[in-house]
Image (cartoon, rainbow, N blue to C red):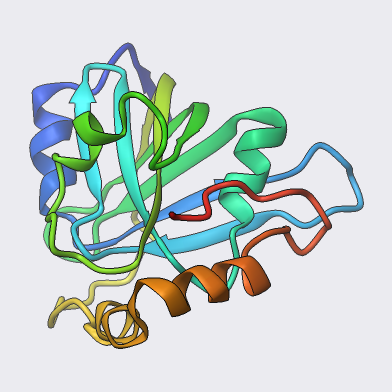
Length: 184
């Protein structure tokens, strides 16, 4: 049974920080458009308040989350336990895209590994609902390690080729929405 909570408690914070992966879900307003569900890892999630989190977004094959946030702000983050006791935890809220030129970029960027290549933008989520559920149907799996392919790929490309890649592949969503966040 799902339970709602008024904030990200210390217990939830401790548990979230142990999870090696999470999922972002966003969608445009148009009913015929595509819902985006994106798995994340690489130490890219920070809790910055009882009802605020930030997510470091790395260059990828698309830029759907940024496009959806720009259009309507809706974002859901889901964590689920693959080890130990079962649990699913969802954070619902309104998000913003923080770009390199934004005033608070440095403040939020400093929360993450400064050497990680391929950083595109940061998502800041004002959490309006914290919800837990049992997670009994989530399989037990053992974590081996984070994949290094994305940081390696971004490092090998370098800043200029990454910018070109983003302009070609990340400027619009699959539904044609403008997708902000091209790094300088």
